Length: 369
Ligand SMILES: Cc1cc2nc3c(=O)[nH]c(=O)nc-3n(C[C@H](O)[C@H](O)[C@H](O)COP(=O)(O)O)c2cc1C
Image (cartoon, rainbow, N blue to C red; front, side):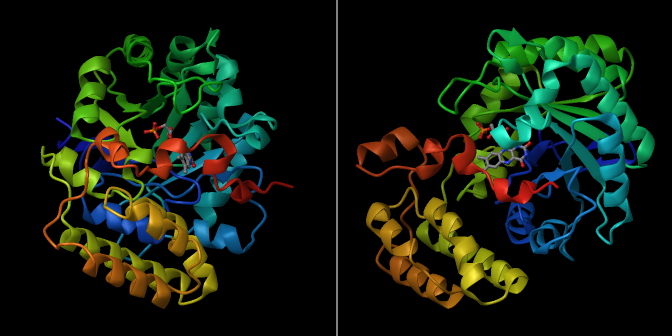
């Protein structure tokens, strides 16, 4: 089912395994790697509607589409209907061509929430619907929404928000199965995602709205769990793809095989090449690549020691050299550890499992005046 194409309005999405918009991560080079490994739809990093009239270097880098990208989504957040509508309009006037726009109603970052954006919107289901409606009226591409279960555990608005969004015409509904006050270590509430989908389906009547589950999808097993427990049509991958773009291939082709050292090296070097093409060969490019390296080396022996070295790399040439040296120290047919718990028993750890709140976000992108 996840391997089936679906329509978002006029847009054909090749499969239901999507790459989430990931601040500081889902740039042109990383999206390309994920697309090559099967991701059905990928997004540029979240934009601020209020920040759209202003341009800076980061915005230029964010709002970019690679020549090889088959389809592309953008994501934006805005506190009010008129702000979102204007931001969406400005986006459509830029050179970048995007095929669909998602409205972020889930971001927990203090700076965003303090401005009434991101997850603050789910406090007010009616407002959520109005923001969506105004955005749909402003642009011609399919508009979708990504929400949390509610602002707090005690105030879960998921059913009301889903019903409002569907009535206002969302083409797709992505539910992250946590509230804003949850940390990443809190479990995903599959039953509440399901409640949201049911409310959405009953508001949709005959109209098909795509339901996408999000949260803790780290491999084939957790992807199946999301589908079985929520009845979603598709899934959105977030931390599960950090250092692990193979996850798309595993889920779409129904296998649990981890890459061997040789397969791993081939993809990581390809990523470094795309990264160098996009950011050019310099200190800035290397710094931006460091976090990918930290995630990529996880799952192989000796990664803890390597991490210290990696956090010092200053050029993409140095990145390549470290990667080759490390790969040479391991048998080429050795497979990466799949199970993070098994991996943890080796005394190693995976940094992406320790992320929370502001640490994991490129919040510097959300500059607003
Ligand atoms: C580094 C990072 C950046 C993120 N950036 C965004 C973003 O720009 N837009 C968004 O809707 N969610 C963003 N998220 C949230 C994820 O899309 C997702 O909802 C959340 O991580 C839960 O999924 P997971 O448990 O599979 O990681 C981000 C998460 C991480 C870890």
